Length: 177
Length: 332
Image: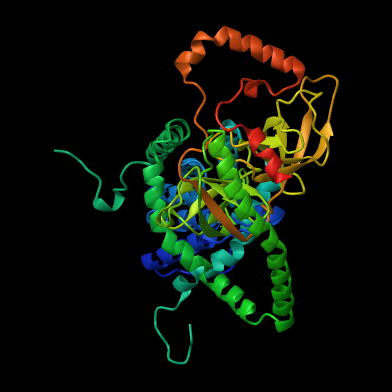
């Protein structure tokens, strides 16, 4: 049964695990980039969280909680924050994404955004809560802006990450894709 | 006969079970890291593995910066060269006198039977990037354990103290800036030798300030006063410029004045820094705990008196060894 909001249904090719790995490493490298100084730093999206949610929703059996936890640990080391902070946030993020993956995939892009935004905000909330518990200062409401910006990238991410699976099965000399 | 699901349905433990497992592991990590500092080895290992990735991620940006630097206009280079030459000349006379003063100082200290100042070992490093964490004020520098950088060392730039190395990895190190929350540095006012402790207060439009805490509201601090390290802690060498007093808020309702300071060093600019190592501890620590206990009552009384006089209470008992007052005249 096709979902009403999706005009064209593709039957996607099976995913290439190497491609998942590639996207996750790429997002990790984007996260390792130095941030702009000043207030702009708060607007940079968390690429790893975004990619993680995407693959949790689309390939929950390949990208699960273990990967999320390990990536969280790596981010903790890179961020010079307490070990386990992002690990916990990403675990919860992954769990929520995996539990709702069957539902989310039936929605169109905008419906998916509505589903994903609270997940990213909750992950940021977990980090914020931990920092406030160990005595950090509240960085301001703009802190949550990075999730909003990340979610605005969802259409582009969906297009790019699913593009390899949209290739045709029978290769045609006269057709590029 | 046991019935098991066909292999297709075997997915291992449920997602909820896994979440509980990983959440517990994260919480354990958090507690161990925050409370017991046991995980530095784990952090060290992960950081070592992460380093090549960090380099790779930065490579395109660095290449672009190099290219634009290569194409820098000649005029720009010429003016900069001229300025540097002038600065070198200006500092040359100070340097020449400094050598003489140092010799004189050594002699005088010898005569006074005081300990000689410690020779410095400095490692030049470059600030690479801010740590990606909106809650703290840390930067990463491009020298690590391999270059002799250790946690606890002091980082300065051309104008003053920048911060302190808090974690050293093989090729990079984390520096907590002076304005990081919870970063404390013992200082003294150059004008009158008044000792205090400056704490970082992050945030604000100007990228964070510092605050002199626990100074009585009638303490002799004025706007524009220059603060240098007092060297009492044995970590920071005495006499390094730290900050200038920006403004003072004295409210009748509080026992302490609110003194806001602006760091002297350009901690918000990327640039070259020096990591300083004192070869041995600068100052011998005050008398050990055992002695302290026997005179605790007396000290408490002293402290109360000192508080009344408007002197920073914790610092009131006289410190042994080269006091901060010996450093102050040199700066003038």
